[in-house]
Amino acid sequence: MASSTQDNIQVCIQDVSRSFREGDQLHSVLKNLNAEFIRGETVSLKGRSGSGKSTLTVADNIRLVLELNGVPEPEIAERIEELLASIELADRNNSYPDVLSGGEQQRVAIARALAHRPLLLLVDEPTGNLDDKTTEGVLELLARLALDVTNDSF
Image (cartoon, rainbow, N blue to C red; front, side):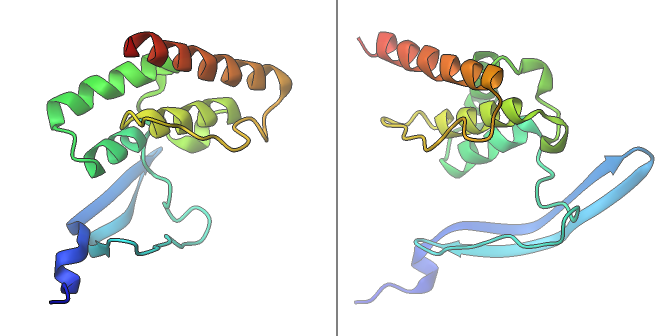
């Protein structure tokens, strides 16, 4: 018997609203959003520059990955704290991506990739758009994290 579309739904969003404050102005970027995402479906988020496509804070970027992977809430907070400390951005957990440097954004991307504790992490040009000093820092971070994982495995 063929499975229905309903059986293949991986993520269901109901009545999601999102706003952010910029100075004294409140920007509402999502209002009562409802969506269903099906296994194997490719979805893109479109909007003009400044429309709020990337309004997640640093911690929320990592939180999203953990929530989508079914990590229980108490563990999410602990893991976010652990990851932000490991990438030396614990003090930037409430920052928005547009106020981070290129190196900080790259480190957040690494933490997001590591959030669900993958067995294998493949990186493609993790320092492609970074200056030499930031490149060195990101490579050192990847090496340190790889060493931590290796030591924890034995």
